[in-house]
Structure formats: structure tokens, C-alpha cells
Image (cartoon, rainbow, N blue to C red):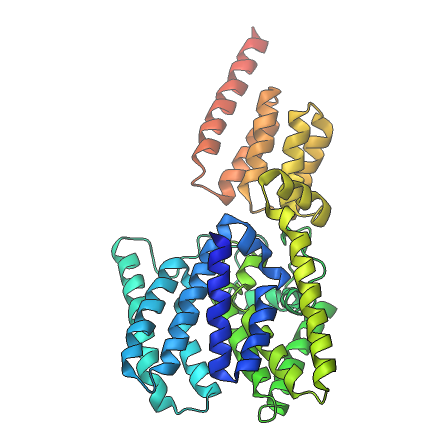
Amino acid sequence: MNVLWAGLSAALLALLACELANPLTGLITGLLFAVHPVHVEAVANVVGRAELMCAAGYAMALVCALRAERKPLFLVGVAAGAAFAIASKELAATLPAAVLLVYWARRSTLRAAWRPAAVSAVPIGVYYLLHQWIGAGVLAAGGTAPGLEHLGLLRRAWAMLPLSLQWWRLLLFPVHLSADYSPGEVTVSTAFTPAHVLGALVWVVAGLLAWRYRRTIPGIAVGLAWLIITISPVANIALPTELLIAERTLYLPSFGIAFALAATSLALPWSPRVRAAVLGAVIALYAGRSIVRIPAWHDDELHYQALKVEAPQSYRTLWLQGKDEFAAGRWGSGERLLKQAIAYAPAVAGPRFDLATFYMNAKLWEPAIGQLQAALAVDSGLVPAREALRVAEDSLVGDARKRRR
């Protein structure tokens, strides 16, 4: 089913590229997008289906928005696409901004864009009103990524600046892919580091290129604007999310890069034969990397093996390995690994709770109580930890009474 949704979204986005430029640009964009290695997590993993469905609705709404300039009846398609996209995933909240972008890319007036933009905003507004009505909250991200806890907007933006280099690497040079991008494997820092300087430099250079070639290769500016718009819901800046970086969240933003690369390749002074050879090689390399990547997301066991190879220092990997070591009776290494996981993600309650559980199994009540109290300090709603704490405290008191006898 995911493959069908991926094919549909790729076809619709290729059609959108045709509307924005020409059929050849659309073809190249569609091919680059269809085989991009960063999409494997979304396509091969059932969790990524929401990304695919959202992209399909998003693209449908934009294609209809452009055609509504000539035939207002297409506004029905805009509303339907927007409704489907926002029901699939909340990153579709950026759709009205994308409508304005594609009209600007077509050199249409904002006066022509306001109607499809408004129509696309209606289902999104209704969705959030219903969320508020049923008490689900508005723009509720479900949590904060480890390392970004207690940071305000500006400090989150500063912390994400060096991590944005991972976006550029994954979108342009997706050679090394990882099953996880969590603390331990990536570093979250609010200090002033060389990575911050490099991150700022990359964005400045991208902006300058977009400005410099805005008339001769407008696809660069359009692609950069698309990237900024579509990545903003998962960028952990305006709204914190549960993940620092995830390859599946780059599914829709990658269209901007594919479109910019397609437009640039057609603008370069290459002969048709050279252009076809270069693009063919890139598409083949992308497709080959995607095929090789599929097993990492085939099932839980293969994903775990990928974690150990690709993200050995991630707190998630250390957490799982620690539990495995305890289960195998190797308590010393299990304790060491869980303590490492806790050190990398001190505000995540799970590793603390699991370590406390193993302590309790060994009747080590005092260290268990310490870990459970720390777990509840970061997640007061963790009911199993609260119940375990009561058991551990009662057991500690009971053992003390037995010793006094």
C-alpha cells in the first residue's frame, strides 16, 4: 500500500513541476523525487504512510490551485486535497503558504492566489477547530525532542542550526543514512560552535544563489522556498516535536531540492548527451542506494541491527542494548549501557524506569528508588513508575524491619 501512495504522490508532484516549469523539468523532478534514498523510511515503514498520503493530498491541492486560475471549478479539488492532507498529517498546515509560493513561481499576481489559498485554509482551520473542540489541543506536537527541553524559540532555533546541516546532507548527498538521529549520535548545543558557523554559512550561500539566479534559474529560489515552508513544521523551531531529525519527515521537503536540481540541470550549458548521462547516473545511484536501504526498515529485528551499525552511540540504541544485556544475564554491561543512555538523554524517563526495574529484580531498593524518582521528575504522568516507586519504598522499609529483628 505504501508503494502505491508513494507512486501517486511522486506522479502528482511531477505534474506540479510541469505546471511550474515545463514537461521536461517535471519529468526530471519526478524521477529524482521517486528514487530519492531519504524516502525509504517513509515508503518501507508503515509509520511513514501518513507522510505519503499527506504529500499526495498536498500536491493535488496545489495542482488544482494552479488550474483554478483558469477554471474556478478546480477549487473543489483544492478543498478536497487540503482536507485529505491535513487529515493525514499536520504538516499540511503549511499548504496556504505553498499556494502563494506556486502562484509566485508562475509569476501570477497575489490577487489571483488569494482565493485558492483561502479555500485551502478552510479545511485546515476546521481540522484545528475540531481538535480544540474535542480537547486534543491545537498544534500539539506530542512532546519535545531530547536535548531541546526547556528551550525557548530562539534557543531552539540556534540549537537546530547545526543540525540543519544533516537536512542538507540527506537531501543532496544521501550516501550515509541512519536509523536514528538522537542525542549521542548527534549533538544538541546552544553554545557557539564551528558547526553553527557552517550551518549559517550554508543557509546564506543557498539564499545568495537563489537571489543571484532568481531570473535565469528561478527553480533554485522556488525549491529553497518550498524547503523552508514544508520543513518548518518539523524543524523544532516554531513548534517542538518528538524527534530531532527523521528521514521520513524530509519526504515532502525533498521535492524542493528535486525541483531545484532539475531546473539547474536544464540551465547548465551541457549538451543533451552529457545532461542525460549525468542525470541518468544520479538517478541510478539514488535508486541503487534506495534498494540497498530497504532491509533496514523491513522489520523490528533488522531495524535494531541497523541501529547498532548506523547509530551505535544513540541513546535509543544504548537503551535497547542495555535491556538485551540484562535479559541475557550480563548485568554489569546492561547497567553501563543504560547509564550511558541516561547520560545522553537525561530528560527521557524510559531508560531510568527500565534500569530501576532491573534494580528491583535484584532487590537493590535504594538505587531503584533513585532512578524512579528521577524518572517521575521528568515525566510525572508515568503511572508504572509511580506504582513501582511505592513497591520499592515499601520493600525497603520491610527489609529494614527484618534486619532490626
